[in-house]
Image (cartoon, rainbow over all chains, first blue to last red; front, side):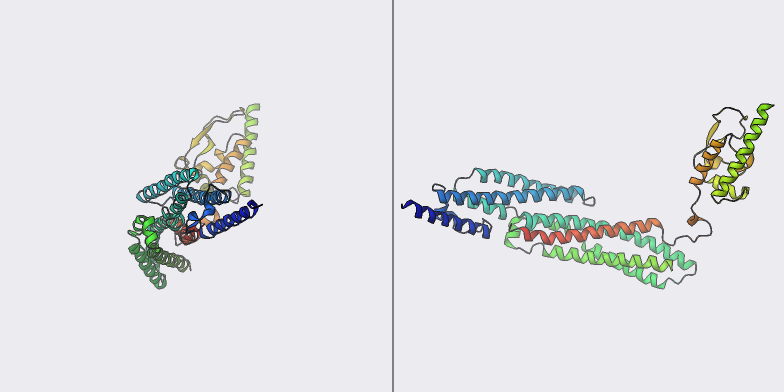
Length: 246
Length: 146
């Protein structure tokens, strides 16, 4: 007769624990491992422990899947420099092997306190979504921007010749010349911002991100400014082609 | 004698075929000045050797020629192939490489070259890729709590 209420209470506590873990992302569930309901030696604790472990393993799996996606992005990025590609391969490969090992540890875990620590490590030790993903994106984007700047510089050189020919043929090219000057200035602005941008992005570690969640903000802002310059330059180029055709 | 008559009939037939084909492709009505540019644009084609002895054989003697080796006079009626089928082939080959109307001497040359326009398009594709990467770089951190 007394067993039933006790079990009910234990189950309620377990469900509460599961809810806490779910809401706080497992790793942030403070004191979850110290409550009696998480004790794997009783039924309720066993349920809560298993639920926490399942969520923890899921959080590992979703990160391993993301890493695979980033590795695919790196492999497909034709403009990445060999140095940046090597750095990303190393960063992502280390994260992949580390999380794979951690997953096996979590799967075999029987101690609630250890499980809590290991689940926390999934987040704080790797920062896949907060740091590794953006590092991959910004590196690919930065090198794509560098390639775009190179191509635009070639386009500007071509257009300068076209303008000179049109001018020699008696065409009024004053507007095209002004646009070309603006285009060249925008390309120069972009090129001045690019050196070292990706190298800096690739230096940040999960520990640095844990200490300062804005470590990438400066690089993101710079790359946005580069994009703006290059888009302006491309617009100038389009405008010049129309002006020369008129 | 019978052979000569047959050959003469074949050649007359071929002239008719060539004339009709040239008229159809808009190159002119048998005017050699109009025919010449088409013949010269033939990159590698099979043209019957004009010096070959006419024969009743069904397989005409053919030679491979390059544009430089095609004399201006080779498009004259005297150089027509030895059978109607090979004449059709030769004309089809020539017309397939005939210059497009846009590149005729009267059309204005484009001011900005196609290589430049291609580079510009490639640049715009790179900038679109940059857009996507920047968007993802700011979206990814939102997944950290998952």
